[in-house]
Image 1 (tube, helix red, strand yellow):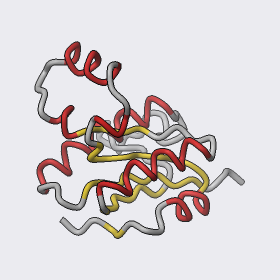
Image 2 (cartoon, rainbow, N blue to C red):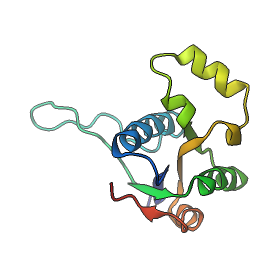
Image 3 (cartoon, helix red, strand yellow):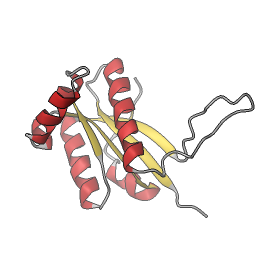
Length: 137
């Protein structure tokens, strides 16, 4: 039997719906690069159309800004590889070099984290995220 994983993306509860969609898409993309277990290989229907091959539950949660950094730090302390995205990153458009330079010169807390993604064993992820609520848009 395979392990039961859970993917969570927690967002700042003050974000507008469009900013939530943007941040969660970006974080999920990077999480999939960090942890190949998230998606299955090629999944197609009878017509040959590609489908998202998500293997485990993926949940979007919301919470306080201060809790986002705590989640990222706690996940790292547990040996997980959280992915964060920031409000400063959202302000840049098609400026990856500027984004990279900005991130490399600052600490996580200075960048205004607006989303944190983490994947891991289901019970452990639930314990890390118990202070967050399901995002309701």
